[in-house]
Image (cartoon, rainbow over all chains, first blue to last red; front, top):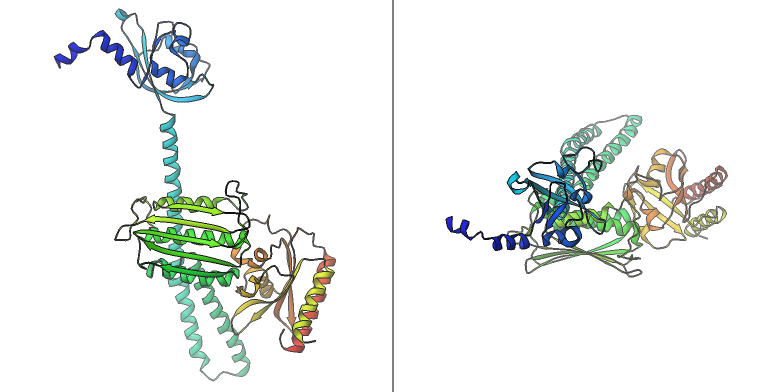
Length: 359
Length: 147
């Protein structure tokens, strides 16, 4: 300890001042900058000569979190005492405003009461934080939506669907009785209507979230979806599955299923295609899902948003949540190709997925 | 001339008189309990042949259930539409569409669809003309027991 204290020679202090990554500005009691280290130049764009003895720090300050009246305050660096940590907005030489974390240390009178200001760039941290928050929100929304769909789908299937089925069975019992002709005709209609209602409920449940996805996995769920899609939109769907057809983490199966659904719906709406190919394969622990259409295609660089524009974003986010890479390739007149790659381990879990996402 | 040609003939006449870009006939098929587009003229592709609609869904499904004419003035700017309900509009790139019920006695058996690929103001006169063709198709269906 003693040794270190001794080694704090003036030249070491100077070296520290010069090479420390935090920007250090020293102000006199009038708030003028009397020294600035090279890190200040990197942070503000002003070189030491431009600042020293000429500029008040107040002129670069666009306001601090402690002053309620932003930019109306006047030379508060003259009077301010020591503050361990506060946020400040700083004007760079190029006019750009950046967020910095500041700590102020007022030296005692023996040291002429100078103020040491240490600045640290926060803008990158803020951006990262903002991005992290955005991803968290998306994750939350997607998970909440999926949970709700699962719940409603199950309610429809097990609740309403079961009741309608019981009604239908009851009707079939009555039908066998000897009914007068006028009643029998009404009865037949009633039975048909009940059957339609049951079919309707079952379709709704499957469209909301197919139970085959939970019970049988991605391949079978996609097979069913392809069949329904063909009848809904009149587009021929060819599904090719290769590699070991096995179960993956539920979250991954859901994400891939939804991406496929979104890509195909987009194709049905905008691509003007008569057929779509789906390829699901696993090779060397990399799962690839590709959705290819043979329609109009579009300019990937300049996407003309026709719908909400959320579809594409949603696909990317879902891919990100399971640590997958989404690639969209398209050329005008040559169709569109949407691909997701996910690397998985031997248990069928994606190698780098967001663990908060579990639906 | 057999009924196939007659149906297409009526669809073409309706399309031409209404200066439309597309016309089609949908039928409710009891045995399959689905609605299908059984005939179309000036179609861009054959997607219509594979589409199966449920009662109450889409233009055809809604017209059959309600027995009333339905008009979509501008499909693209209509918000909150479930795309899976209107596949024919996407397949044929229609933006304005009129769906009319085709009656056989008291029952709605089918739907006549008149479609435009650019936004078109639909007038009551046009609807009256279209209805005339829906009646014609109904008579034809009754006479031939099919399309």
